[in-house]
Image 1 (cartoon, rainbow, N blue to C red):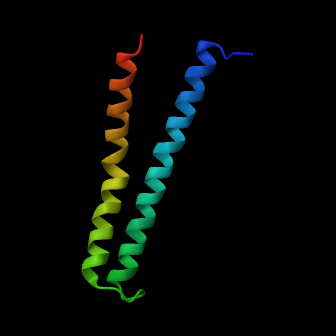
Image 2: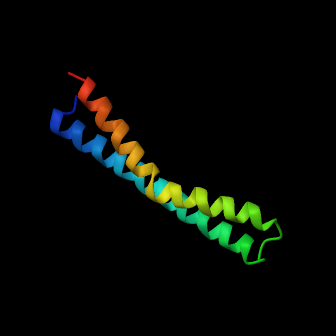
Amino acid sequence: MTPTPREAAEAQARTRFIVITAMRFAGVGLVMLGFAIIGGVIDLPRTVGAVLVLVGVADVFVMPLVLVRRWKAGDKRRP
């Protein structure tokens, strides 16, 4: 049985929500790993930790906005 348009839209929204949430969790993980490196818990250069913190912050705050903007642009192109 094929899903109704409403069911298909709900499934797409659910999938997008999961992707954004996973992106944010990955970003938080990178920030935590970066702080562990900066704090000396993990024996790597502090520069690596700082880069991981910056990338993690971008994953948490910037990438979800980029994904949403890309998805909206793709939805407008569809009939």
